[in-house]
Length: 223
Image 1 (cartoon, rainbow, N blue to C red):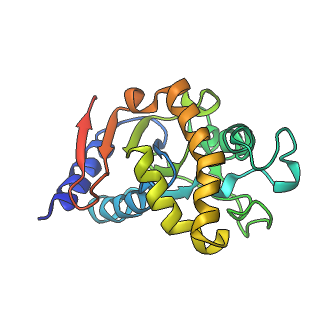
Image 2 (image 1 turned 135 degrees about the vertical axis):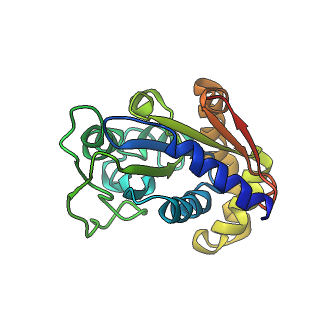
Image 3 (image 1 turned 90 degrees about the vertical axis):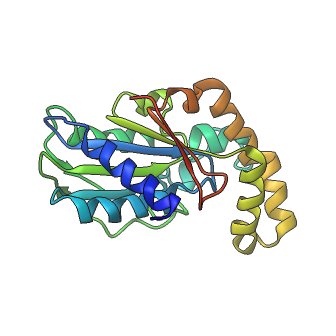
C-alpha cells in the first residue's frame, strides 16, 4: 500500500468515526491548487468502498456568487476574491443547515457553474441521517461557515506551491502563463494570505494534510 493510499485509509477511518444524529459535514479546506478536489474525490471513492452510508460530494465552487452581483469591490482585487466571490449565505442555507441539527435533509449540490454565470442543472435532493458530506473549497473556515462543519480537513501547501501549481493549471483559460502569474500575484495570493492571517485555518482544523508531495502526504491529527 502506497503512502497516499495509507493516508486515504486513515482519513476514511477518522471521517467514519465522527458520529452525529445528522449527516456528518466535512470541510476539505485549503488554498487554491493545494489538491483539495483530488483529495476529496479520492476520499469519496474510498469511503464508498468501506461503508454503505451515502457519501455526498460537493464542490463549493458551484456556490459562487453570480459575476453580475460581484459589485462590492473591483473584480481583479483580492477583496473581490476573498469577500465577494462565494455565496456564503447559500452555502449555509442550501447545503449546511439542511444537513445539520434540525435540518430537513433537503440540500443542493450546485447553484451556478464555477464561472458564476450559468445556472446549474441541479434540483434539491434528500439525504439520510447517516450521510457523509465531503465539500471542498477555499475559505471554508471563515466565520460565516465555520460553525456548520462537523470535521475540518486542511490541505496544506506553501504559497510558492500555490503559485507554481496555479499558473500551470490556469494559464490556458487565463490566456498565458504570464497573465496567470500576474493574477495570482495581484488577486489570488493576497486573498489567500488574508485568509491565512485572519482565520489561521491550518491551526484550527482537526486534520491537516501536508500535500507538498502528493505521493507522500503527511497527516497531522488533532482529534
